[in-house]
Image 1 (spheres, rainbow, N blue to C red):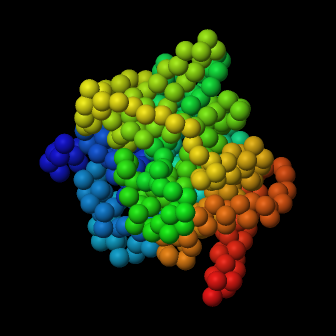
Image 2 (image 1 turned 90 degrees about the vertical axis):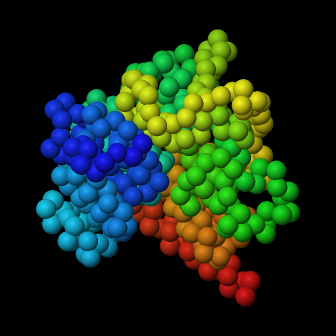
Length: 407
């Protein structure tokens, strides 16, 4: 897949007429890097017009040299990187994310920025009329009630990048999200079950961060991997599915599928089910979000069901993995409850990875924060920001209380 730097630089801001201009937010993260792999595989179809990343300025420098964007945005600390970006437009901080999201030459914005920081640039990209390929969970989990109707009103496409939501989208027959068929009976999101699917409950109390990060099928960032191990990730995807596909929670189900070959299913009113199958490779849903409505040849290997041999399915055990039920409850409560869920979980996962919290304490901390939340409607971006800050402070204090009690 590697091509020469000179060839790739022709994919930059001064490149081919008719090529799709792409801004990549979070370009140095897992999804951002894979997005650029897909773009490099289609040098005549796409050109990178903006890159935005956090504090990994060394990798951002390599990406900028390779893809020659017009704009480079450094969200974190990056003053030492000025020498390699002197000939480009440079933005910093949250304003840099928004500048990349609204770049005038961007036809499509890939939102791969992690966390709640992606909400504002996603909104601004939609406001600017940019087709948005969304890989950030928090945007829809926290603000789907605001973002999705806003995009629909402006006629802007949101294209899901998560493998599960992409699978549902593809199973619906190349329909844009704002024109979905109405004969859907159920959405069935599949989950691998993570590394502890068959681990006895008594042993879960003692699992380490290294064990939790050893996902059996996917290679993802640390936060998402831990959320997969607790099934919180699947709970967040249930909330996303509710808004992305405009379907009530009682018609969204989760099914454990350890092979991660069937990425999700749609059941229609007559009982028939349509599924999307592929090897577990995030470059596939990324590419589909870039090339929709076409399926085009890409860098991924083909699926061989003969090699897979057999596929297994089972219901999730919500007693052993309470995060799934917690997420559904927060989603049904609506308002700022999903924001509190997401923020508290993020703090708890960080504490677990730092060795300050046990694995089974992650959902317990999240539940305690949710139980203490008193929302103040109506929902707004300001309310989301306030709830986010409150949840983080409260979760941190709950964790400190636990540490004091066990000292």
